[in-house]
Length: 295
Image (cartoon, rainbow, N blue to C red; front, side):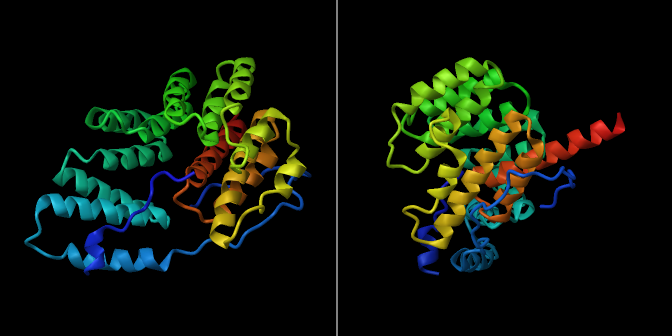
């Protein structure tokens, strides 16, 4: 699932490493479908080069400079250059403090660094500036989930789902958080929410997998159906691997979960929620492993 749509503005038309968790061998990660890892889109690289040229202009209006920094930051983020993206986002809000979308991305980066308090502040700022910014609910919910405040995360995910009840990804995140609060209720809610989903959308298969109406073997077998490009295939696999990992994690099979999180990262679909948080999941599992070793 994309965090935001990457749009090259009209102005251009004229112009991880993670610590090893050393998992035990697993029998579950066999014969999984694989895609060619994505490479950076050359159009994005060209756009970045053009932004670099434009930002050298000394007489540019502050509002335009802030917008260009934000746009370049989004492009950096989409190809995995998170530090450069964060520098641009911070510079953009220093110039123009009312750019809601920039705070949204800064909040995501704070979540990935496990600075959850700062992340909440960023997402609160988004909603203060634009209460209709629905993805702030998703991203604040994710921050709350990883910040071990699942009860509050559920409320944000409910608000996010209410804005698009047919979106299976929204139903999945609500389930993931609600499961931490009440597993039985989470399954009941997911089953109820599944009734609104479009069965022709591939993402509905994720919900079927979690509800147990679709086996993992059948789920993996149908992943390529309707896919026409390697990019789309890598994106779909990134999502599939992440949610399979979360499923194994819940079942207590951390070795399989770690393997699937690593497979999600291997797709190089940097702009997807699932890719970003697969890295955080591995960081958290590595920390857990270190704590267990220390004890």
